[in-house]
Image 1 (cartoon, rainbow, N blue to C red):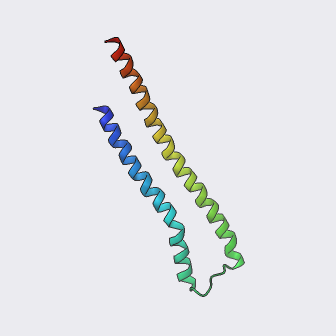
Image 2: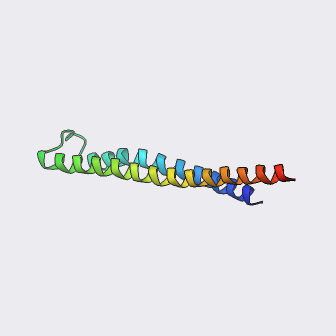
Image 3: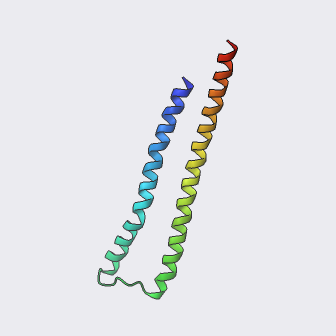
Amino acid sequence: MQRASRKKEVKRLNIIFAIVVIAMLILPFIAIIIFLSSKGFETHILPDAYISYFIFGFFAYIGLMILVISMFAKKFYKHYEMQVSEDKIEEKTGERE
């Protein structure tokens, strides 16, 4: 029973992970479209003042992406370890009987 509920939780985590990653991949394109539409589409080249903001935002975005993926990876690894330990316990109890 516990294993079935854990499988449901892992499936739910997979869905949440997919949604978060897709949203984070789409976010820069939305930001660029908003920036270009607010400044006008004829100004495609960023002024010098905005380049530093762009570089900072790019590295902040990469850091956020790494943080989110590592958090989900830790969560998945914890579930995997629990599942492996449960399997080992079931094998030991099965051998004893």
